[in-house]
Length: 99
Ligand code: FES
Image (cartoon, rainbow, N blue to C red; front, side):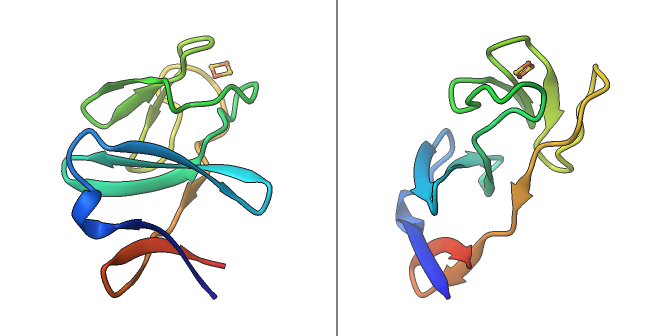
């Protein structure tokens, strides 16, 4: 089942929005004109990531400053589990998730 999250026309560089999906917070973020979907929860100790700092495609968690590659999800400078990235789905003029 497709769950629409946002209209494609709104996905500009710098876009960030959090959505509640089945009890989870999902962060939709646009970097290099590419939409990225991930759980809004740091794999280190669960801090929300939507206020993290972006440097290119690297997202830095606001709580302890661990850095993550938004392409692979990998933690870059600390031993930590990767980000939980989700595959975007598309239907018409919307981006969302296949549930
Ligand atoms: S909770 Fe994100 S780095 Fe610790």
